[in-house]
Length: 89
Image (cartoon, rainbow, N blue to C red; front, side):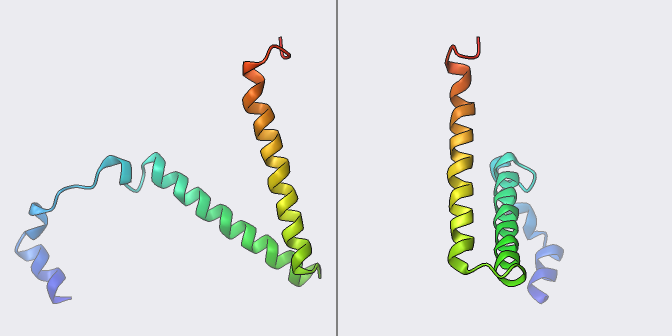
């Protein structure tokens, strides 16, 4: 507490270089990291729900998430390649 008070009263904060805009709390990079963290917490919540409330074995929950990962990769791959092909025209 004393160090913080001295930091403010001695104006040591003026000598610190500001954080780059890339690493600021509202930057795209930090917002993306926050979204990934929220996604991981949601997946953890779903895993707990499937294993505790539904009674699914742990390996079954892992299989569900593995299949969801494969399916989402397939869909994202198709969507990302669609503009480069002529089958939409």
